[in-house]
Image (cartoon, rainbow, N blue to C red):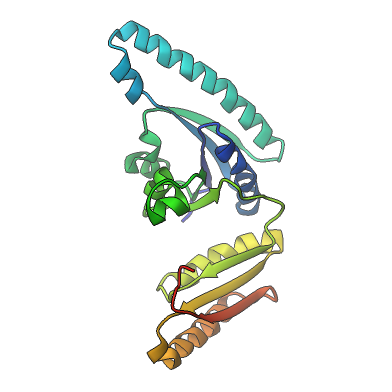
Length: 228
């Protein structure tokens, strides 16, 4: 992907604010411009207010308040030597496929609060929708994640055909931040452990031909509960 854009969705919550450190870290490592995006939710407003003039005025007020906050975030990001812009959209357009396809960002970095179901507990409902975007890389930041520096990255593999491509991308981040990279596979296929070991050894050989680094390790783990 040739895009040099990182999209940073925000609702100005503490969770979204917490993700900004990762936005900056990714922007610096990947030499990308940042676009901050805020969605003004109008669904509940249109349901509660029938007068179009009052509704329009309310939306304009919300946009004005959002723009002040976005400008402040933009200025803060630019202090790190990054180019930054912002955008305000109405409704949940931010999470629609067409919106992201038009932007075609390299990466989407967003905070998340889990709600319902396993996927949503990990990623949050909006993030779960966004993470299915077929083109962009999505970095989902849990609310309580504390950013110091990117010191170690764990890449979990299940021998997908695109693993090497993903790792070549991750190499850019590990190189910039001088981070350690651990490539792991969890095997719960006990009858075929020999085959699993052979696959993992083959993957290790292929990756080390492409990525030559003293900071990369390979670990084959065993257990009957992969999620755990």
